[in-house]
Amino acid sequence: MFIKMFKHLPSQPLTPSLIFFTAKLFLAQTWSLGGK
Image 1 (cartoon, rainbow, N blue to C red):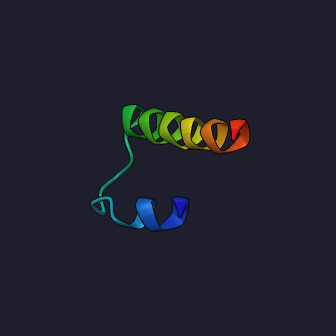
Image 2: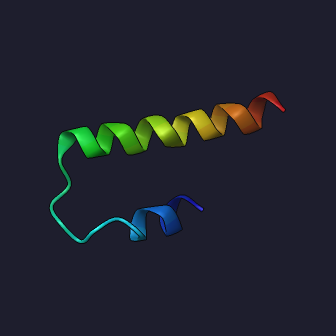
C-alpha cells in the first residue's frame, strides 16, 4: 500500500517536506492499524 501511494507521486526530486509528510502519514496509518 505504501509503495503504491509513493508511485502515485509526481516523478520529481523528493523534498524534505514531502518526505516528512509521507513518513508522518505512513506512521499515522501504522499506529491506527496497530491500535485496532
